[in-house]
Amino acid sequence: MDLIKITEGNTKLYVPDNSKYNLDSSMPVFFNPVMKLNRDITIEICKKYFKKDFKFLDLLSASGSKGIRILNEVPKAEGYFNDINKKAVSLIKKNLKLNKLEGTVFNESANKLLESSDLKFDFIDIDPFGTPVDFLESSIKKLNTGGLIGITATDTSALVGTYPKACLRKYQSINIRTFYMFEVAIRILIKKVLFEAKKLGVNLVPIFSHSSNHYVRVYFKKIRNSNSDLDIGILNYCESCFNYKINKHKTRIKRRCSCGNYFFQIGPLFTGKIYDSKFVNKLDSINKTIDLIKSESLIDSFGYYDYHKIAKKINKKELSKIEDIITNIKQKGYRASRTHFSNTGIKTDIKIKSFMNILSK
Image (cartoon, rainbow, N blue to C red):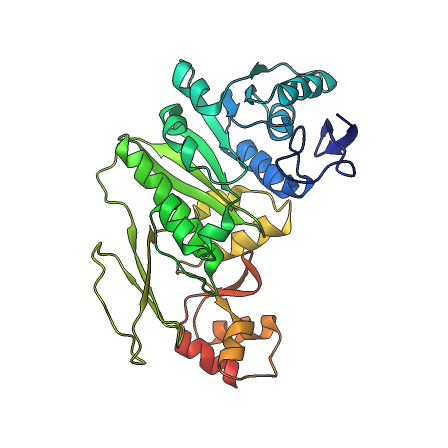
């Protein structure tokens, strides 16, 4: 295996030379440099969340890059690593030695390890190549109360509605593409995780979510038993005028939009808050994603508006700058912010018709 030595954060790593391998599952040990954002945010969340000794599991470690960074850059961390690939295990040990760190390394299938071990963890990281659904049940069982579980899904084509049948099969939700499809993707993933936890009598609460161009990721906190119902509902979406309504009832009742067309019903999905704004505010603005999320997490509304796509819908060819549109919305007494979900997206609590009126002027 051809390796190169890199530095990411404050950590040195041996990783496969990407000039010699395709960036896919055929790599001898998978490492994606683009996922640095994912790793950076994980480090920052662990730094701010864990104030005392904590035990973490990097369940699908590959090169061990994320777990080794946690062990090296977050105080009071005790690290456990796992990968079914023997080459990955050797590379993890090599990277531990490179950074003069100690960690426990397993060479097992993920579910077998979780089901056979008596260990429980304060943080579990699930970052698979594809869907995380196969690892949810066994991972949730091993999470300590008060702990965090970080879950990545890279099968975004299913979650954003490009392949509705795959979304229904994997996540048991009906979906189509919308202009706020990345937030819908996160809400469908959250719904799936909460349902799996509920089956086990476990209560999870999402505290941070983010999306990149090829994955979505959510961090959940395990809380003590709660009698409150899950915030699950149906998104009624009008493909004609972009109007939408949230139906928090479980029944799929056919309803017409005010424009006369039928709503397309998306879901079930999570309808509650996808951020804990108080926790988000504690994070350092280490990158643009966190900086944007700090702003948008203060707006308690569903979805976001892609002003380019909406302008095309209303045949508006000359557009104001996005900052001017946001200012205009705020002047009308509403909240508004750019969103990390889209460069042309605006998070706001203004209604779609009023938003269109602002764009049309």
